Image 1 (cartoon, helix red, strand yellow):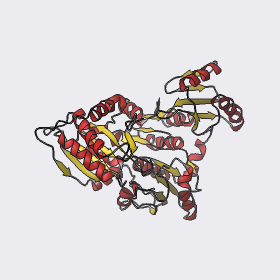
Image 2 (cartoon, helix red, strand yellow):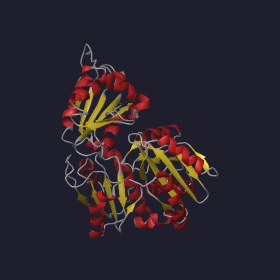
Image 3 (cartoon, helix red, strand yellow):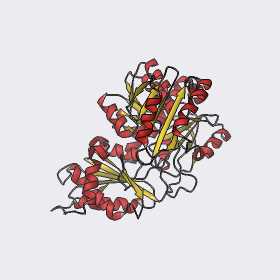
Image 4 (cartoon, helix red, strand yellow):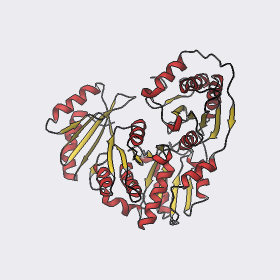
Length: 446
């Protein structure tokens, strides 16, 4: 499989994705967006990986070769690139990043105007075709590149979500040597908390741990530091700064769907609104949204679906099990920093520890996401359908099988011969009874 994926472009730097292809991607993106000297410019940002400056430079060469102008925002977490595209009125943008992937990877996240994502079914397939055709006819007049530092503007935008009466709590943040280490120091210049930073040095070789906060081993140091410092809150950001995992004051990771329910509460205490969540999430998410006066909307997994539904339904907030949190007032894009501030707001408002806030939300027993190597993924899904004929079944994303006191979803990986299972039950006894029934069909988790 090549570097063009369902939602972005990503591959090993050199053999799969290099400056030559980056130049063609820049040209193809500008062509697809219809950008030119008299149309809005295209934003280009980049993360801290060793390959990113060269990849950004090549992409900008391709954009200007097509006759479009560029706003080069330089180092930027992905949410800052989204902010730049929206706030500067750009035609779209390219963010050079491979997110949480190891150092050898590079990639692009591609957007059109208002930071609307471009995926395989919304333009990325056309960009791939243009980029791999090998044809780049230069425009009569090449575009220009303008460098623009938007760090302070971005900081002020994020701070709009912080309450004025934030309590000065003790916080430990692990930036994973990623882009959060670039923006958070500037943010905390205006915030009252006492910050203990971990791995804030920008280093795309990731010398301390992989920048994926969903893997427990990558938050081990953070969890220990939270307990050591007697901190009130811990947070771990991923490589490009668009995802965050939360740790309570006891050093325990709080699952992202539980955090979606909690952030929904923070949002709904201020305004009734529609809230979108991915279908892997605990039943507690919809229950809490309804409890606090919101309208829950269940959606497929993936930022393209969550963001599109959030925009269409005029909702305010959306959350995914992957630790992405989306906000209408952030161009319907994800922002780990805004999610972090809303959790801090709620802790200040209710004068409670994070563990106390989430304890009532942990009323179901969850499997977490389990992966199974299955070659005939469609055949296995049909077998599941036949095995549970008396269940309520839907096909929104994979197959969801639901009974009154337990449910599960099995969905296909977009990139690997894997099926992914999430299962939840009302209690431990029921969970211990039904999980083996499903595992007997799927095999041993990887």
